[in-house]
Length: 411
Image: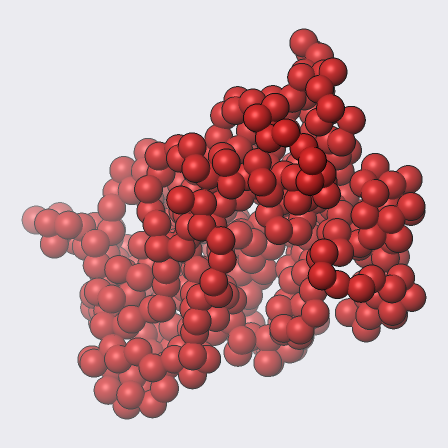
């Protein structure tokens, strides 16, 4: 019988998170094996070509504000080659009073200079963005083709091994390392350290080690609309991306004269259906009216030209789960990236690599990781004393009382 091959570091999951972490480890001189059940990278949500990225600038959630700023800067630096910087406009919510001076001062408290965020009144926004609404202009906001970025991160490298069409069913501790087993309970390989970056499947892999993670699926559908050149909608189409209740990319003029406009996304909590839903297109048409403040727009003139459906993975408290699973030494998690995969994967690459290589905390601090931010992302935030005292029980006790926010459904 042939003994399973040993690898020092194995990454389970070849989406944007797993690929970015593997790439960072390779850059640090490590030998890495990445394993995925699909025949190629970026087979699920990371096949998405229309992801947007910007720092969060809403009120409240101070840790989220600090984290997204750090993560945005890391993402911008990491994906310079494929980073499509077109700016993103965040309009004022309809029920809010917008005072430019107050918002400008608030942005300063977030350490967002005018190169990153500017408060604009409606007339200024019309000049800068072509949108007659007050709000915040994020000039460095961008979009990223996740599939292209994932494949680039996993391009051939002498210290990278890729195992495709290989499904991991469970993990079993063996000596100082971990054995990966398939659905027939046959050993696949042995690893010194394992990084689980498998989105919702992370829940099953954690459960195989007696750990319960509070992960939920959220289905999202983007709609690709075609707008005729002389339609009333054509005059309203944005030349920048907009992020508010939903989001859209800048409209693109096609060779035939019509416009292509991508709008999304529906939010269907608990759903995993990857089929295209006509109801989600209807939902996105209404989102489109809201994003442009075009209440009189005839949505039947937004002609369906395509769609993208993905199932995001979220944790109960809406923050990602990134870091060492301290109850299971040698296991690290990068999951629950939700709709911010561009940002969180860049942050996860730095944080998890530092933890895997046992870097000094001073290095993390130089990257912007204060101790409270590391703790805010750590898997340990979901566990009380039961699991630490009796690991075999794998009992879940969330200190953060995770609650998924209510949101409009598209079905």
